[in-house]
Image (cartoon, rainbow, N blue to C red; front, side, top):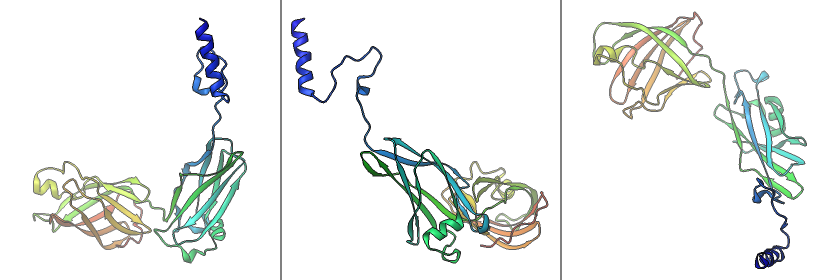
Amino acid sequence: MKFYHWAAGAVCLALMATSCHEAPIGEDFADINYKAKGALASPGNVQVGFFDLADPDNAGVAFDVDVTGEAASEVEVTATHSGGASAVYASLTTVPATLDVPLDELLTTLGLTLDEVEVGDEVVFSFRSATSSGTYISSETLAVPFSCSSDLAGKMDYVSTNYFCGGDDLTGVVELIEDAAGKYVFDDWAFGAYHECYGGPASSWGGLQFVDLCNVISVSGEDSYGDEWTFTINAIDGTVMQANWVNEYGEFGTVTLTRQDGTDWPPLTN
């Protein structure tokens, strides 16, 4: 017993700055006299997610800013445009907080005009926290693109002609399903042609996406066989669109899509 008390005292002398009081039952020793150093500011709960160039007067985003670690007396939020312009957009003295970023205010802060930003540009928000122990630049950033709102989802009547295995015109219903903002998937990319030519639907359409970027249409990704597809718009007249589709395997067809909801197609192009 005497040896035990002598050893405990020696440990206390060696550590000096560490308290040697006994930890209460159930208290984690790692938490005793522990003080965090540094602060990590991070964004979350992003609203909208892009600056809508189709409606610039009302465009904007909002997101939350919070800090873990030391308490921050200030969080500086810097905005950097992919074209190179950079400026401090806000200095938050209270966190957590929600930061609203109207497009017009952002452009003014960056010294840009609407004509100087394009679809595909983005603004990256970065964060620096000031605490009692110093300032800390966060490794977490938030990239917000310039894009346009899109509302193409819905069911359509289709008529397929001139498809790869020949035969009579095919009719049916296809659904365009929203996969993400401005990104969609058809539940039948071949518009009945696989049923006619192969006796059934594709087992999977892979990662194909029908992408609408400010009324410019493209197909991204590959099907389950690793082939890319192209969708070319020939004409749009109200609720009716006519287009050609083709993939790298050599399958192809022409389809006429008529929206069942009665809304007109936007002026889509390739």
